[in-house]
Image (cartoon, rainbow, N blue to C red; front, side, top):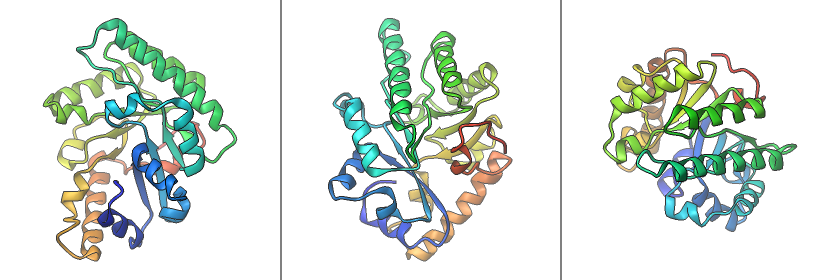
Length: 252
């Protein structure tokens, strides 16, 4: 969800419990207006903030600034300390960025301990060794869930089938992990992904609900239908994000 009037109206009038994924750039705008997650979205919305933002903007974001925004906004969950990691990068640079992401993840988790915000770690890495570093940190943090960022498979024309292959590889390496997939909401694609994909986030909903073309009540009905379709596609229902708050094993 983005900081736009149409999005605001949609969530403010929605009668059901929602889960919202919010970029840290939008969080900064809201914090500067004195808002928190609760004051802006209300009790019926579970807020996840994320650092999966534009690389140029990301490069200007320090850990201290990120922590300050998260502490002030008080989301239920935060996806911390993203760093750009691409297949075409120099392997040394890629490893450096994976390690920085993991270092930041540990730092952020320690700083947020004792608050109401829980960390959802990012899975990074293009090689088994790079991903193994992530699995080791996840084990250290005591989490059995993570985020797989898949948006670039579509924006960079890599395609769904490469995404599917990479997801299957991850599941074969770490079958115990429960995965939130960012970047894919098409039910006919989601029904092909491994069952370890328990939740999906993206922007397809904006077009699906015809947000700016029909009354909000009709958009909300279309959203409910889309949510049902995604639940059915994932096979066992979309895992409520709040079920992850204990940091223990996730069950469907």
